[in-house]
Length: 167
Image 1: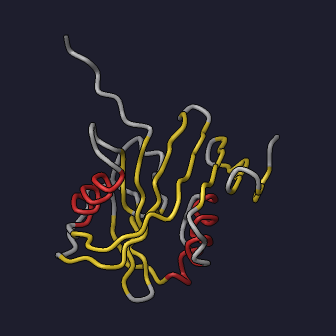
Image 2: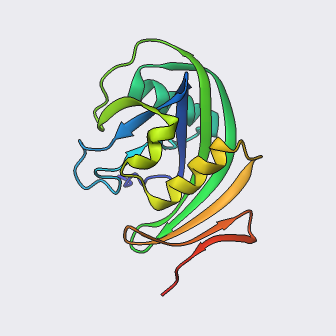
Image 3: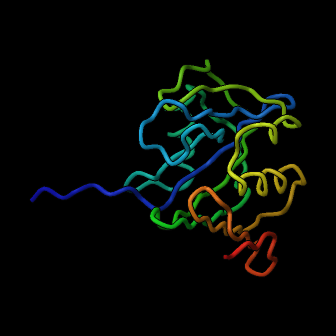
């Protein structure tokens, strides 16, 4: 029996740090990409049997060529989007690694100064968790609800409504 392989609703996203910059991925290469033309960290969907850390390390190596040696699990982000479903993202930062940066088949990798991040074409919700990372917030749960590309609601730790634009 040939079973269709489905994508896991679990993903990782990592912001690799060097000096005062994050390694960002400008998603310009994939067709039919929900992140088309956006700047994001690196990461992707879990494969069968992977833990969050397994996925983090595999995706970092596959997308960048870098081997992470020090990372921190910063939070879980729940994304909902009409027509896309729900995704649960394990959010990390990493500050130690080795290896040579390679080309990524999903877009262009670039070190971007942290104080310049908000000038990029980012998802609105990414600006929220990037602020939480900058503030060194303790482990958090953030729910981001989108309608198309528009952020409709952001809820931090189940109770703090950060953004509400339900229409």
